[in-house]
Length: 211
Image 1: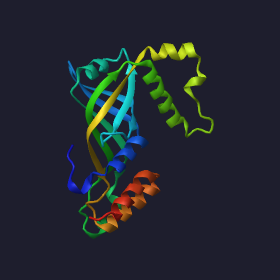
Image 2: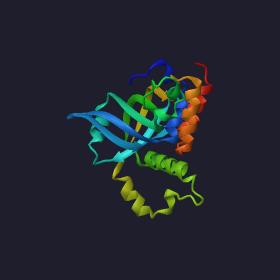
Image 3: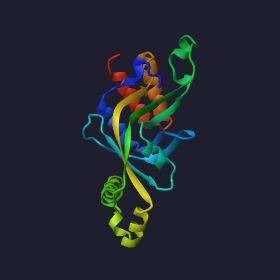
Image 4: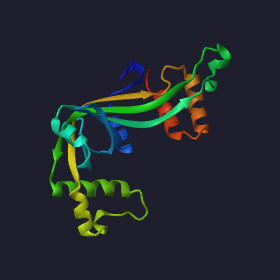
């Protein structure tokens, strides 16, 4: 990924926050037929090593199981807030006319090596944790224990778990840092007016950071 210095984000805690907020990752593996991409919710465990560990599960019938068993480096892509930026928001449009559209976005690329975990007790514990994390937002959280035991046991037999030990993280926060301050402020205002509050907030945070 091309990351100009102005857009580089290296703080692990910031990268982890995006990964937790947007857990549906695109997992890119190398298959016998070339590159393979699957979209899998991954749970981040901030344990040693410093970059953390990603935990997930897939259907045993999914060909990605063979990719995970093969070993080698994998790539998980986490996509954060994103939005189109119209040049009509730029104050410099009236000053020079030298403006063009762009796209603002935040992404994390997590590289690592995975291992399959074919252990029902481990898998059940990880599924309980994953469910509890996301059900916590509900006024009446659901738990895996509510489903009939024979039903969950049958489903557990149809999936397999994996861990991906993250070896390096690359973050790109493209938030109009290459624009003058009055353009940045106008972009944030335009994004809020368009209902894109999440990315507007990131633009404002980037504007406060040292250039």
